[in-house]
Length: 146
Image (cartoon, rainbow, N blue to C red; front, side, top):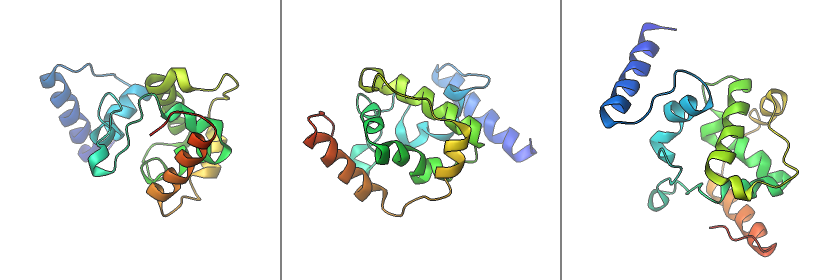
């Protein structure tokens, strides 16, 4: 790990400690804290007014559609993440259960390193538009998602 990266990790961890938030040494929760929570918030609530959607009770619904499953890997924050493919798969698997356990389909198959490697190299350019189309399809199928 470079000195710059160590300093960044230390700074975020120190900020979390000072804020009273638990800090994970490693793993998907720590990766979420380090790479996602800045926009999506620690609780997954996002910042809807700024275009960052609330993942709570929603993100699991995307797994009902093949295009929705792909979407979660291809959104810019995931596709461009500095995490490796295996760590990204672990993060996605953690995230859908952490924020949307009740919406995850019973036949859910965990993301794999290979799947993430294949999908993240073909990101799309209109994340909000793609998300809106997926939400429309899910709502048409009777799923309550915003």
